[in-house]
Length: 237
Ligand SMILES: *[C@@H]1O[C@H](CO)[C@@H](O)[C@H](O)[C@H]1NC(C)=O
Ligand SMILES: *[C@@H]1O[C@H](CO)[C@@H](O)[C@H](O)[C@H]1NC(C)=O
Ligand SMILES: *[C@@H]1O[C@H](CO)[C@@H](O)[C@H](O)[C@H]1NC(C)=O
Ligand SMILES: *[C@@H]1O[C@H](CO)[C@@H](O)[C@H](O)[C@H]1NC(C)=O
Image 1 (cartoon, rainbow, N blue to C red):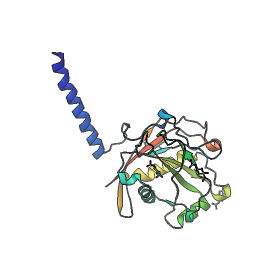
Image 2 (tube, rainbow, N blue to C red):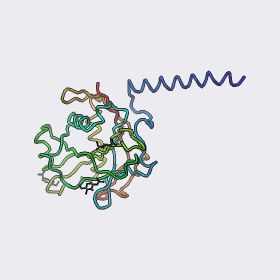
Image 3 (tube, rainbow, N blue to C red):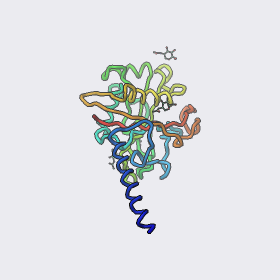
Image 4 (cartoon, rainbow, N blue to C red):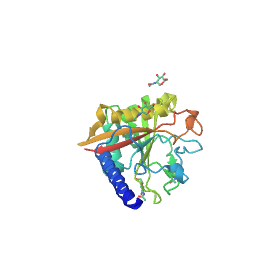
């Protein structure tokens, strides 16, 4: 008798979970619960939410672009176009300042170098990054979670605000939290709608705690952070 009752109930809850999931995909709401479909937690498989600067210490991976974003956003060209939509462009004349950093996203790839580094363009996507190199500003590094053990496709970003060249391009005081918040504000303000090169994006954000310990342990320049990671889901509309 019990079986006859419990089975329809189980089916019903399965159905409503599916319907709910579909609703979330069509109309992301803020804030929402994060799921395994957004990204795989690197800490569960030997990874780290701090990248490594050659030497020892690292920068926090303080923004995750959800794997539930449109697939075209999760490619190299895709994230570059999105970055341009929120005011970034590729580095000044292709000149890299500093060595690449590496991250271990727990996806089976181990420690791998950043894919790309982008800088804020100050409204001019050709020369703007040169200006940024002089006056400082926001920049970020991109790591892809695509190892065979957990190939979610999510992008992990180390975002920070730097001081200008006379200050030796060190990370500004509070530069990690400030960089993260400037980046996500540029993405989600104005109702989350941004566009560049004929592509329009709708972005929703939610904050996650518990992935990075608040404070400055293990962080480059001893700069403390609040430990918040912002998850962005970017949909091409
Ligand atoms: C990362 O880049 C550095 C500098 O180009 C290089 O020496 C190192 O071998 C690279 N590491 C990996 C894991 O590719
Ligand atoms: C660089 O930053 C220092 C310290 O904040 C400031 O005194 C200097 O004017 C800045 N230089 C430029 C070119 O913005
Ligand atoms: C993972 O992404 C990086 C950066 O785009 C790429 O170089 C690499 O080939 C990808 N690896 C796999 C297994 O797809
Ligand atoms: C995340 O937290 C930061 C710091 O409290 C806040 O400034 C930001 O607005 C929050 N972002 C979202 C999407 O809730």
